[in-house]
Length: 326
Length: 259
Ligand SMILES: Nc1ncnc2c1ncn2[C@@H]1O[C@H](COP(=O)(O)OP(=O)(O)OP(=O)(O)O)[C@@H](O)[C@H]1O
Ligand SMILES: [Mg+2]
Image (tube, each protein chain N blue to C red):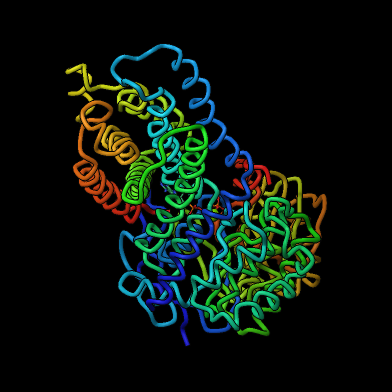
């Protein structure tokens, strides 16, 4: 069953098209990820799907409810953890959750139990009655995830759930996300610009850039699409070698960098001698050559033509959660 | 369904109250500051025999003005604090909940008004302790009504400002450039009865009707025309109408806002 279904969803801000005519579906029970660099349009998509922004064009359905005409039904079916913290820091953890539970109509009897349950899930039980302004960044994030789950949403939206957190906290959060997907059967839609996060969590991802979905598939298929193995090599004349190798039908994808090439192939270790032989015939010296399994980085490069890191060094943005001080 | 909206109103109200009670500095400032006015300004000017206010001491004359000022500032603050919620992201959490924006506004307005009323009453009690006349039961009722609708009007004003401003840097500017002149020209500190120009200016100043009404309710009909200008009921009608207008415009602007 399609729990999220978008049709030609588009958002313009003045003359900028932040989300450009995207159509996709997410199945019930999936962990689906939107992978894309800063400014790709991930947050804008989430804001439209969660009824906070009105689409310029197109529409979407969440759990069978239209995001434009049936806002209230949509709002009842979803939980959201925004990219920027959305807690009342002058209240305690329990108070934040209690307010949430009331606004979602959870009965008095269930409220207390459920609050304990979700605190348990994110290991914050001992911080329940502490004012949120005295939580660490990671604790705030965990509290927000707990809150998003309070009312048993059918879909939980997580916008960059681990942005700016340390490695340990990130892994803990991944664990909670998997746990609630498994135990509460929550469908999860998350955005990230961390490859390892997408790799670790998602069944399926969409790569989004400049508001467009470039490709969407299971991570396994995506990796296979660029070959089972990736050969990285550098030589005295990369350009010439590339022209030669491109003609071979066993070379699935190629990428050129400043001083090395990558080739997507099947059975990479068997191809290395062939490549070396070819190079020798052309009088090119191979300086280094290696073979490895493809990563999401390779997938990303092959579809966007650049690394995520390029993008990030170009526009270094301080995430808002840092600017404010925790 | 209905229950959900009531819960939303309750939550927004409770949140204001909790934040107020926890913010000790706000509690202290909001009570100490008016007291300074009342004690220092009141006692200072008391030594001059102000002809036009007759046998009433200046402190008693000042009390309704200071109470109104405290309520107006506190309520404006609640209205404008929507901006804080926007800045700190909490507004998104509220806007994505399955409750109507009207309930959110109602809850917030009631919360802001309650906080302002608590402050208003504390100052009133202190003023009575300092010797202003004790109003009769009708006076008390009128005082209550004026305080409530003054608070509503100011919360509404705050909401309107909040929807026009995008950052809260402009907050002090509005307080100083807009609110201070309105308060100073409202007859809070000096009577405007004998100066036709001041009276004309006062008549287009919403704060004037609040101060004049509160003063009328406090002193009773005997002082009509000497201490205050309009009969309290007239003032009340004006203030109630004002509150309806500002709250409607304020909630409309809020409901149009995107997070
Ligand atoms: N309210 C707005 N007004 C104008 N432009 C906006 C607005 N919100 C977003 N944009 C623009 O839309 C584009 C997409 O922004 P969006 O926040 O969706 O990116 P993102 O993929 O979430 O990026 P990040 O990884 O940095 O969070 C950006 O170019 C951004 O500047
Ligand atoms: Mg974003």
